[in-house]
Image (cartoon, rainbow, N blue to C red; front, side, top):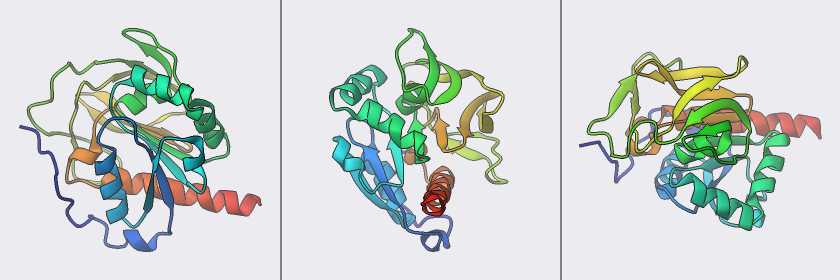
Length: 218
């Protein structure tokens, strides 16, 4: 069975809490948003559950967790968060999407097609990794560290294509599984369900950089 983490271990980077204080808003509709919050708090960030546009005030980054992408899309539109998240991105705020969140951030969605935020130049295939929880934690190569990265897939999308300016940070069975461009980070797997905090550490670094740039622009 996949290794589902119920209690967070100490984070892998002991210097994490000294990298700069940031506040991360986690869209709390579906998915294990509490697990994302636990990791980010362990790494020294403050977290806020986001259900209304006003919840984004003061946030340096946003996490779009797993769940059902069409349900989340409907919620984002009904609450005005769809346009608010796009505006947040245009201002340079860091955004991290996992699984369904990856679908919402893609520029093109297939199987079947659906509307999305379109913030990252990539094409994703919904439910590409099947409809059952993976029986094991998978390990794949990553540019973020020397050791293989832990990955858990739950009805995860497959990234079929990425734009030329999108950087692939990790792969699973030869396909891109973790990609980024500027202030946007996308994972087709669930890093919140493993002991490995590498991906969340990387996202916090993105949020810190975005906050510093915003401060310099004032």
